[in-house]
Image (cartoon, rainbow, N blue to C red; front, side):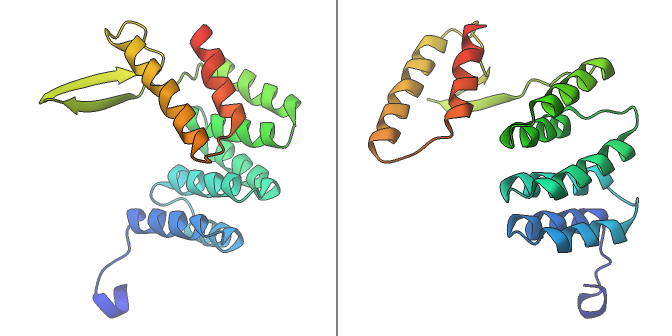
Length: 174
């Protein structure tokens, strides 16, 4: 970039490279690249992208190494999403003791998930809602439509990750 186009690579460029290479499965290359970059820029973002790629490509051994590095870098400024990702990686290999350890550690650090919202514009009116929001006036209609879409997707051959659906359904009952 610098030699050919005169553009000095930034932390954002580094993060994009990590994300792109991780998505195509070049995990060892991304790991080496991340180690070479040191502690400049969005370090947790880079390592978090690599951790996500480890999960997608089911490289749990490298995922453990990456998560250890992230926890070392993170210090007391815990980031909820990375802990959940690590917990999910452990769950996928059936390591329930490590799942429990990660979740307990999150609780001890006082980490809580920020609520994300979705926006939709219907007939010129914006609507904001969050998952499992039973206070939203049309939540019954929304969940009825989700059920309808789920049946149609199943009929069309879509095969969902059942553990995610079970987590969603049981979460609604709480």
